[in-house]
Image (cartoon, rainbow, N blue to C red; front, side, top):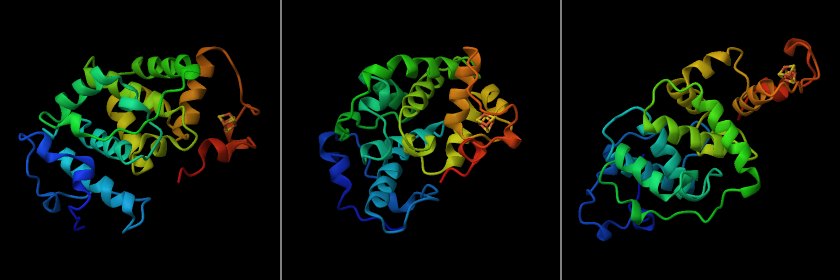
Length: 226
Ligand code: SF4
């Protein structure tokens, strides 16, 4: 995809930071966009910003997913609130670790706030994820916070995260919380699966059937997430 640079300065003010690289975005690979329309304005903006962010990547684990979510967040996609739910200090640390030198202060940020009434619910989901983290790296905490915050949205988890396909959220959970991903061995929808784990931990049984195979809610739990 050839990207116009006309919208570039809307998202990144290159002149604000002389250290910003003069990125040849046309030479960078597009991220898979299975559910987006070619020529869609948001797609082009997101794709351009994704390429600009990835130009600062050291190609560490989670870089591509974070760049995708970050680009979508700046473009107003998904539901992530201010600082992607991390708070300014952790958001800045996350960027410094994954995209060192990226001009964080030049990013436009959507004016969305975390629903204070649901912080406890978010924190329970976050702790559930962290119980399964594969290592003690800081980025597991950031990913857990971002994932659990997006669970408060109304759409599929990958959409509320600003990811561009369901496969991406599956890979994100497998990479960071492998033991939890293994438990979803029937490929349940991710939000349904995460909330069900909380219910099971609290001894709450919400299913209307003893078996998924004969349950009237099967499509709600296992249907396509598109
Ligand atoms: S399909 Fe039915 S039994 Fe299975 S998890 Fe969903 S609600 Fe529970």
